[in-house]
Image 1 (tube, rainbow, N blue to C red):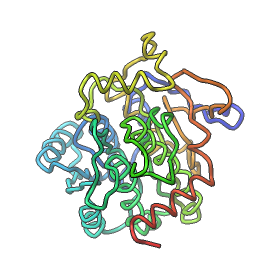
Image 2 (cartoon, one colour; image 1 turned 90 degrees about the vertical axis):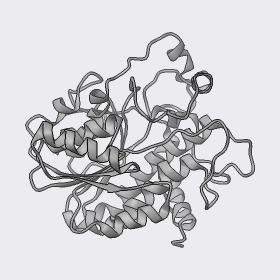
Image 3 (tube, rainbow, N blue to C red; image 1 turned 30 degrees about the vertical axis):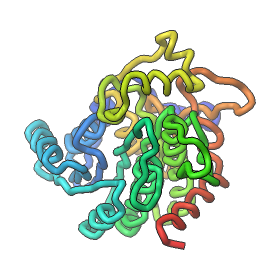
Amino acid sequence: MAMNGNRITTGFGARSTAADVIDGIDLSGKRVIVTGGSSGIGVETARALAGANAEVTLGVRRAEAGRRTAEDIIAGTRNKQIHVVPLDLADQGSVAAFVAAWDGPLDVLVNNAGTMGRRDLQVTPEGWETQFATNHLGHFALALGLHGALAAAGDARIVSLSSVGHRRSPVVFGDVNFTARPYDLGLAYGQSKTANVLFAVEATRRWGGDGITANAVHPGTIAATNLSQHLDPDVSAALVAAAPYARTYAESEVTFKTPQQGAATSVFVATSRQLDGTGGRYFEDCDEAAVLDPAAPNTAISGVEAYALDPANANRLWELSLALLGFE
């Protein structure tokens, strides 16, 4: 591991796979949860952790898909400690049931699941915009409920999956649910991904004394996952065109990753001893991302916005989330 100023670089990169970064690591005795573990990079994250002998629980919306994934992982790794538990992050009752069913310490929580919304505004029964409710509030409630289990592990880690999409929007604290402004799919998704970074910042600040650290990761642009299952091509093209990195996409400078490569940064952040005690940071391609200058236009598909790492924003989001969940 090298330090570029205060920025961590690792020797791995965009083409590294989850198998590459976990090579030589033994997770025997470690217990891990991977949300959204039945598809895409969630499967490859779970597979790599299981291959290193961790006990892995897949939190999934579709139990049958989760069971098929578990059987495939067991067959490939010969690790029988793979469990499947229903978890719908848009449903706070489901989150509470998952937490209630958990027993014992938890070493790693990978908040991998995510959704990209539809063209029109969708809300939960509570009135929360669906992407914010699923990508942030669901995972926030899950981590909050599992805090005791994470603390019991002594040196637990949380991996919070964000996206380059966070650059579309900060958290708009005065209107997170689009009740006072026109709904915009890209802004809503971007806001939820910014929230994922801010969660990592504040979780580390609040829970670091319990031995819990949290980091956010951008997995990269993956060739095929279920994340954008609701998007038609016209909507997808419009999202890209409106992004600050649209020119980069248009000039075909994007390098698409396989799911195995997309899982690499999550697995690195979850397991590497090089990150012991490190939290509140944003990683991409297995390295810590550079913080972008707010005064300088940047069209590259790399870097993290300063607003996503701002401690004041992180604290404000935490307090807002507690209030929305009724924990004031």
